[in-house]
Image (cartoon, rainbow, N blue to C red):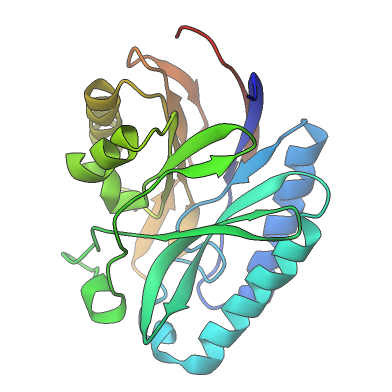
Length: 248
């Protein structure tokens, strides 16, 4: 059983549609995380293609390029830190908003968003199919419970992951800036922590996409609800957090 783990939060600025450019910045962030001794680098929601991708998801050639990019990055994890990355992913005859764990040169696990964001400027229900029942991902002796963005705003996914044996909740996000939004995110994170008794890693992107701006402001909340790590808003940051198995 693993006694310690180093998880890097990669707060980066992906561009919608620029798969080649996004892969380059993912590689650069992974290199920075490796220099900090990371075992795992966590990126935001749909970071391969940029968020929100809108009708690009309806184009087969675009999905092909995303899947090839994931395969290329997976091959590079034969050595060095693993990657938790977001991408549109074909499952049977549907497309899902997925998070993929890339480790040991392969796609080690795939899971998909349950609560599709479908209000305001978001219309994910038109583009994606919800994922199946949430299950923890085993990673080097630790069970990771991954919730994709909106999944953290409801108790059911976190509860199911905790009941399945998750030890750390990990949340890749594409959460746009609004006044007081940082406090709202933190309140939801603390609610999930209080309900499950599990610490939580929250990673958000930065940058502008059409009329939306993303402020980052990624963070880690401990089991007691305390803010253990807070990344600065509006800037690219790669910050390693070190975890040790213990009573708390």
